[in-house]
Structures are given as C-alpha cells and as structure tokens.
Length: 334
Ligand code: ACO
Image (cartoon, rainbow, N blue to C red; front, side):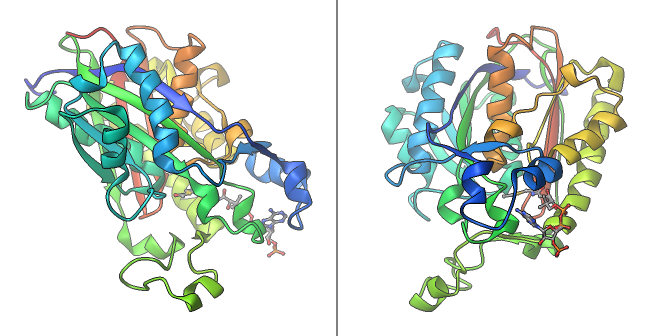
C-alpha cells in the first residue's frame, strides 16, 4: 500500500438468526413457486430474525466471534464501522449501540450506508486508518435485518432477502500481505432503482406513508441485474489490474450473494472453477451488506482459505454502489 503499513483481516465471525423461511413457506404467502425462485435466483431458504431482534443484536454475536478469532478484546478496538441499511434507529448509529454492547470504550464508531456494498466500503475506510498509523484495530460489520423493511405481499422482493451479520477485525500484517487493492464506485443516477422511499427527511413517516407501503424496500430487479453483472466483472478486473495479479491466481472469489445467475456470469468471465467461489445464497438469500462477510467467514471456517491465498471480495448494491478488494490472506498480526 505505497509505503503505508500493510493491513489484513485478523479474524472473521458471522451470525444468522435461527428461524428459517423456505420457498415452500413463501408459496403460502404470495403467488410464487419453489421452481421459479430456484431457477431465477438460486435461493432455497433465508433466515429471519425475531420481532425482538434488531441489527445491533445480530452484529453483537458476529463481532464476539470475530474478536475471539482475532485474539483481541473489545477494549483494544480503536474503531467500529457498521455497514447497514437497516440500522436499529436513524440515530444513534448502530455502531454506537454496538460499541456500548461490546464494552469497546476506546473505539470511535460510525455507520456506513452503501447497501450491499457497505461491507466493502467499511473495510476500505477502516484500512486507511490502520495503514496511516492512526489506529491499530478496526472492527467492520455488515449487518441487515431486511425482513423488517420487506413487504411480504410483494413477490418481486420478498423471495430475495434475508437477515444476518458478518464481521471482520482489521489489523496490521506483514509487509506485502493483506489488502493489495481496492475499487469503490457509485452512480447516484440509479438511486431510485433500489430504495426505501419514506422515513427520511424527503418523506418523513406519516400514517399515509405507512398506509401506502412506502417504508418497504422497492427494487427494479431487471435493471439492477444488468448493472450488477457489469460492475461485478469490471470491479474484479480493476482490483486484479491494480494489484498486478492474473485471474488464474485467484484462490477464492467471495461475491455479493444476490442472484446465482449474476455469480455465474463472473465464474464464466474469470474462468473460475466452482470450488474457487464462495456461494451461500441458497441458504441465506440476499443479506445485503452481510452477504460478503458471512460467506467469507463460512469459507474460513470450512478451511477454504489459507495464508498466502489470493482472495477477491466483490459487491454491488443500492446507491447505486459497487466495490471490490484483493488481498493476500494473512491473519497473523505484525
Ligand atoms: N414468483 C413468481 N413470479 C415472479 C416472482 C416470484 N417471486 N417475482 C417476479 N415474478 C414475475 C414477474 O412479475 C414477471 O412477470 P411478468 O413477465 O408477467 O411481468 C416475471 O416473473 C419476470 O420478472 P423479471 O423481473 O423479468 O425476472 P428476472 O429474471 O429479472 O428476475 C430478479 C428477477 C430475481 C429480481 C432479478 O432481476 C435479480 O436478481 N435482480 C438483481 C437483484 C439484485 O442484485 N439486487 C442487488 C442488491 S439488493 C440491495 O442493495 C438491498
């Protein structure tokens, strides 16, 4: 990183709620079928949090596991970044709520809003603070309770989303390892393709906005689909090029988990065998900012990532936004 301190992921963790919502359950709720959902998306089931659970509760569970694996305590954290579009409240931030739950009294705390790309925006942000020497340990979480803003009468969206949290502890690693390159981007002109129309200062919550279902997530699926295929490939190419790495060197690609057909296009484009791609959307659906860190943590737990491996994380989402990073895996603190 241009003479700056090298930064890597020291530990990962994830948490998904116990309750499973299957395609068969959804068949009873809206006019859809298991066959349609599996063939159009690849999703078979998703996890749904309880009415009492909020995003910070899921984040707390994932964070504890990541801290344990990184072998550091919450008190050692310098910063907490929570990526979410389903915060506990508009403010205080979910990161501040989590800071208190963890007892991370030394840590600064902020939320990042970049929808499904949020975890990558958070990782890129946290990395800068460690690379320039200001901080040593940054906890980055992608967490969503999308079930809370999903309209379970709208078949266009309700079959797609699930709840979960994934976490990563960032810290200094041996020179030359860890994050090699980043690509972050945004195209605000496509903002309306994926949004939660009401509840902000443009359209504050009223009885009318609630009656008109304006607090639910809306999406123009096929437009987002085309954008997703384009940017997932271009962002991956950009981080490979910036790091001077060939596509043949990728050991593990962890893509955002929105649709198996989008992931398949990347598999074809980069000539990857399936064992080099982390896929979990069949079990969790699209967990927005939580998808990448949960898939990464599951790959680590399954022993699919070892030191020295070349790992690419890539995502896209509301905003519109996209992002990718390439890292030489190394969990040993320097
Ligand atoms: N069951 C049965 N039929 C359905 C369902 C359903 N659950 N949902 C939609 N359909 C119907 C539509 O009504 C439409 O019918 P019509 O032709 O009679 O109008 C038909 O299926 C085809 O709809 P399309 O939208 O063209 O289907 P498509 O193949 O594009 O698949 C999907 C839709 C799965 C949403 C896809 O477009 C997609 O995955 N888009 C990308 C989503 C994404 O990547 N989101 C990213 C980020 S999310 C975030 O940031 C929070």
